[in-house]
Amino acid sequence: MPTQEEIYSKVSATLVEALNVDEDEITPESTLQGDLGAESIDFLDIVFRLEREFGIKIPRGELFPESIFQGDPEFVQDGRVTEKGLAELKARMPFADMEQFEQNPEVSHISDLFTVDLITRYIQGKLETSKN
Amino acid sequence: MPTQEEIYSKVSATLVEALNVDEDEITPESTLQGDLGAESIDFLDIVFRLEREFGIKIPRGELFPESIFQGDPEFVQDGRVTEKGLAELKARMPFADMEQFEQNPEVSHISDLFTVDLITRYIQGKLETSKN
Amino acid sequence: MRWIWIDTFLEFHSGKSARAVKNLSLAEDYFAEHFPGYPVMPGPLILEGLAQTGGILVGEANDFREKVVLAKIPTARFHREVLAGEQMTYAVDILTLRAEGASVAGKVFVGEELVAEAEIFFAHLDQARSQQIFGDHNFVFSGELKHLLGLARAQATPARSASEG
Amino acid sequence: MRWIWIDTFLEFHSGKSARAVKNLSLAEDYFAEHFPGYPVMPGPLILEGLAQTGGILVGEANDFREKVVLAKIPTARFHREVLAGEQMTYAVDILTLRAEGASVAGKVFVGEELVAEAEIFFAHLDQARSQQIFGDHNFVFSGELKHLLGLARAQATPARSASEG
Image 1 (tube, rainbow over the protein chains, first blue to last red):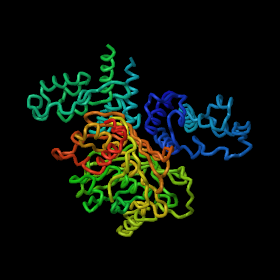
Image 2 (tube, chains in turn red, blue, yellow, cyan):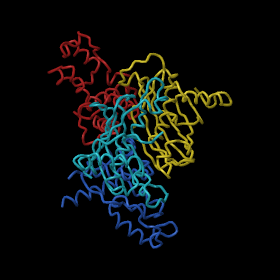
Image 3 (cartoon, chains in turn blue, red, yellow, brown):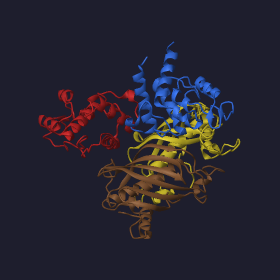
Image 4 (cartoon, each protein chain N blue to C red):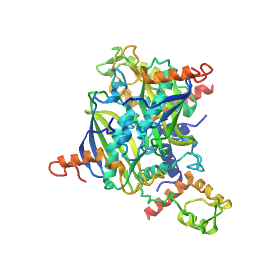
């Protein structure tokens, strides 16, 4: 079982390959879209590379859910995620760090949840599960 | 002044970008051609990326000399590098680790001198010089 | 000009790999301009040939149900120029094949010599951001490419040896 | 078919950057096959347009003394398909320019929308492994491309404003 640091380092190298960014630009807090310029096609590329790199299976939508709320008014009201929506997000992405998002849960900020750290935590959980 | 470890880590990330190899495949001893599959065009790409990454100038032929011996019989005899040739190599590439090569100095093994470690040592020397 | 950059399949292993041939002929139009007196196949056209070989490999694996589009080329390297009169072999292996898309590794040889290589990443059109709606007609595989594959299968002796699909 | 994939230069800053236009016209042959009923510009052809914009930028910086060849595409990404009837703008910046070769970063827009991007790496032919000997004739820049650049310069008002070279 690799340490968190080792996982982070591999995730970081994977992003260098997939996004053609310099390693310098990558920090644990970097957001994939905003900071590292990932576009929709890149998310699939990242999933493929993580699978190869870590020898794991990442089911569709598990790491990067494609459309969580589908405009459902129970989950989103006036461009903000409701309490119920937040609970749904946490259930779907237990590996996400929601603390900051919860303080201002605008739908348009959801993409900021997808950080390098989020991938690292997801992989760590995945490796722990597969070990048991 | 970054530590040797920091330099190695950046060199490694640069090679991931330039050669599209996984970080896993890279060790300090990896040879660029034999182990990492670098082809002639890649050497120039690596030089460009190192310059950008470290903010240094790498004069042509300094890190990767293009043709050291030019078939000169003083330097090469029967496919082996002569004493004089070894001295020339050391003068041209003070950052190379020649120890293993000297034990069996076949010309065809010269490419094995070009390892990830060699680049790291070269950059380290370069950064020290520019600091003074 | 036709838009088909492979001439025939040498091998086709469904869901795994394929090898195709591309002959470079001075009768091809673009050689007149690229370059006058020095007929070199443009690198991007070599990539198109690899993408066609890989695209049909990926498409066939899904029985041509998905519209396969080129989404990304993580790296392409051209080791030397290829000239009219030479014959290239495209060798493509599937790296990852999933419902959402696929990636392949391609190598291009002239004889034994590696002249170019690229990794190519395909998305399925419905997964890409295209807003278009086309119904069931699969325009991507309606043409010459699919015909070539049929030809390879028909020629295979014993039956299906050139195609395990 | 002609092998010229840019139509006109909008800007040309010697040794630095260039912007060129490519109109996608249904009169272009390849649209008949790529794809029937869905005329999409093939991704590799978009790369060729970027490489032509970048190649002439790099070539001009050396006064066309060097033969510039496409050696490597470290990454290319296609964000959406581009269709006949659209107009693309190629925006290319030089990243590194040296005696041995050069690298450029290119972005492709339709209006304000980024539709593709690529990094492209050029070697100078004498630096590449080509064994050919051609003398002084620079076949790479003998054609339409150089003419287009001349046109851009001639049209520039006041003189040289479209070209700082």
